[in-house]
Image (tube, rainbow, N blue to C red; front, side, top):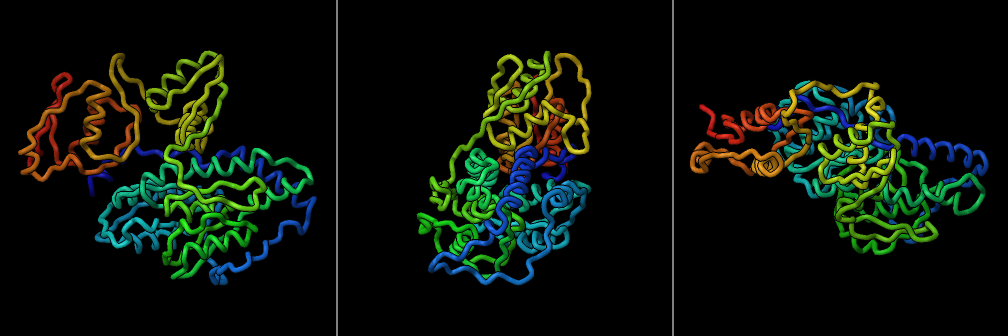
Length: 420
């Protein structure tokens, strides 16, 4: 078992991937408009000069919607010994009926050795991605595995781009409303080996009657066979463009898109109504778990500006009863004055140590020469997750898996190579 898997003892599934209310609003509008305008939403004709790929007749039968979410929450065990990354992901994709897209920048030939016992499929995929120096993002009905700097932004960028359609939808007969509904219609994109990303963009453009500006920003490349099941125009386009660090903007009439660089720090805003008397408790929990978020409380309303994942975490703190299975997170009492830690991150071991020194006052002492002789590297990336853990419990997850022994003396933590 690698050190990374040993640090997952208390990992919990993250909150639901999308904002349910928004999804239901789209669905209801779709039903009304489809009944009012039959025949208006047939597939658009291909754009002149487009070179769309020849799609296979029967794309894989991947899970979607609730079945997709349930599969990600399913508990599984996994044992890999020198497993090729691409082949391993393809096996998981086939056996679990999930669409998994590996970003073109992640080395598919990496050999991974893993042993994971009874973790959710989403957690397993995150561990695999971390071992491959990547991360995951769930976009629609697809699991994207790519560079962490892209995966961490992808869903927030999608929410921003999709909201530009949602904010103007109304149940009427206007051409603008019909056009925006067309772009929300979900389709499956399936392509064979040696398809180019420009061909895929042309295919999406032809289906949704879109013109693409600045398509020359997408270089020539040849992609392996894959499927994006039941995605909106926004989801299909972003899954392709993200692999070139690109996003897009809608034209005013929504009949085209302009390719742009992916935003460096995308954020969305959301407000929540709090129960009377819980304002300070909720604020304390949020700031302790996400100290950089800076929520603002006015009367009984709290406003947060952050990523989709951060806002989902805030929502889980405010409304724990809405979490999957209506189960509240495990809670326990700790003695007054005892510092507890709550976080989830992938970073070098030395970064965790520096952060703890800065935020909690602990000082770590060790002999660099002894660490070097024992082949202990502080730049080794690990996944560490803590939920209301004491300092000792955090140290137990940080150091023994890295073959490091520790001794706590007040605020000083002395580290030595563990006996072999």
